[in-house]
Amino acid sequence: MNAITLTDRAVARINQVLSHEEAGAMLRISVNGGGCSGFQYAFDVDHARQDDDLILERDGAVVLVDPVSLEYIEGSVIDFVDDLIGQSFKIENPHATASCGCGTSFSL
Image (cartoon, rainbow, N blue to C red):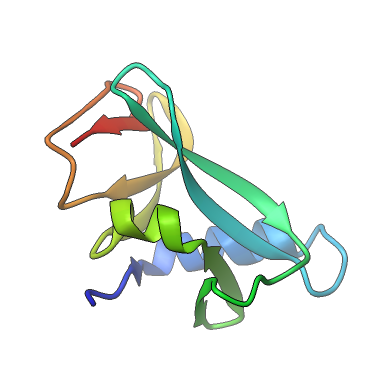
């Protein structure tokens, strides 16, 4: 299984976001059907780990990924970008054959 990688910028932003939440908060990344390219990424604050979640921990940042979503984003690099379009998490997904301009949806 290829690991999911968190960049330094992603870790810093996750820690910043979670610092405003209750203790034990984690970032959940999931893949849902929809979006302009077929699938879209979702980023949510979660307080409960599921038994089958992949748990990524780095420098205090905790990210959860469910097994179904993991199939779609395995091997990805999760980054945080701050550019002219705005601030957002960006997933560099080796499985995506196309993505939309906003970077929040993709197709396989």
